[in-house]
Length: 213
Image (cartoon, rainbow, N blue to C red; front, side):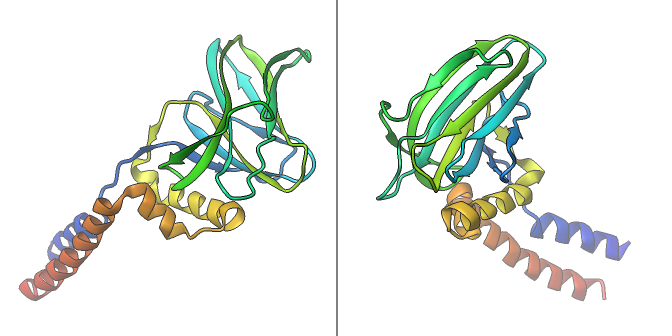
């Protein structure tokens, strides 16, 4: 019983509960076509164009509104000719997002902890069926972000997984540290609170070990 009590206290103190409503980060892994699941959920697909278009598949079971936008990192040599087209299975083009004519607006993304340029976007209601969205650029070696959906999800117990994904984004695309992402995403108060909780957890553990010895 004593060991059970100690375990419960340690779990409560050393594993603080963090609930954040954020856009879900995704890394495009180089597949010819990336399937977009739950397109109503806010997701950011971090990709890298290397001279060829990349495609995203939306397989919809019901009529719904799609939100799609293009973004690039806000850096000195940012390439803003990234464009995209939403196409039906019969080849009909429903929407074209032209990055060459769009106004790219600097915006801070609290999920990824970065400042990006927000480019063309669309909200379009589509019928059930399959749709392809192709992303392309006139140049090569161009990083981009495809933002899909607007309903932000609470991370809850998925915090570790999300931090890992953000770390991959930083290492492979943004070249930034994973813990920097965590700090900017969670905010200083949560980070400080976590550190304090760990300190008090250790003190409490020492006290309990002595008390039940």
